[in-house]
Length: 204
Image (cartoon, rainbow, N blue to C red; front, side, top):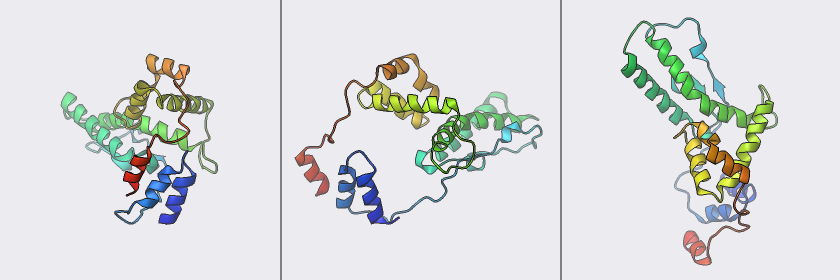
């Protein structure tokens, strides 16, 4: 993919070509860089029956994700925080490494479920296909996303959850579920809410 391909994709693959038009008028600060490692891979170290004393694994060594989700560094930071909390709470001991590894495994789960659950729906993906629950969750998230367009409270919950700022269970809090079942307050705008003056300023 080169710069022309990127602009073409932005014009054709999103709801309105204005995104591609704005990119085409802009001057890139750097050359385009593509990501080639799109695989989701997880190693369940926390399930090992025996674990070496003093060893802890975190970050990409535990799980890697499709970079489109932007979760890798956030999950690594959450793993480091889990290690800190375990050390602050119980200190060093014979089973410290195993305890920390189990805590790290719990921090990996939300991002892993998101990435693997979404990517398994693409054609030609290797590995286990989507379960019935995955499909149900996908339909709920699609409706929630549409609802977020016109409901700020739902949008805030969705952004916070997808950036791992809050637990994913935030998306099934009663008020969010009720708002999602009710659906968006109005239909998505047919055109982007950009005035002629704003468009001129953006492209100048």
